[in-house]
Length: 137
Image (cartoon, rainbow, N blue to C red; front, side):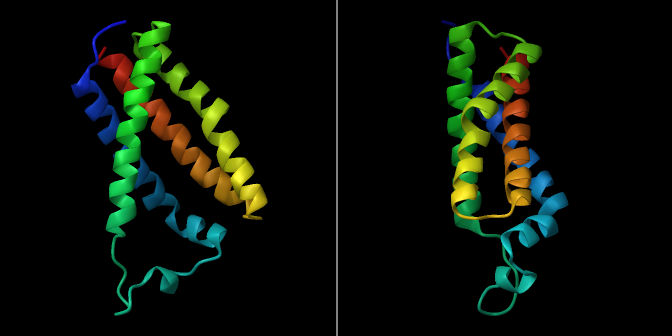
């Protein structure tokens, strides 16, 4: 197994986190609607909307853990380029991520659009991570 590329893991986590920021920046209104929330639901006690720092930090930590584990998985299967990194990320998404999101949202009786938006975000994140890890391996 190749040595752990910590710079590649950090770069993959940052890239996925930024891709998520763009994703929800574009689809934020649709995401709120799928949750059944309004802009007022996102406001603090003073009526102003603030970035939710706790979830933002958690999101980055999750991206870091995902990048670390995707890197390890890619190392075990011998994936060492952008193409195989993208394929690895997509297969992890199909096998573990979208299945989990779909089941959770179905039991919570969430709108299908929430699964589409959140699932799309994690597909993007894993493809970006796989591409970055593959490029930097």
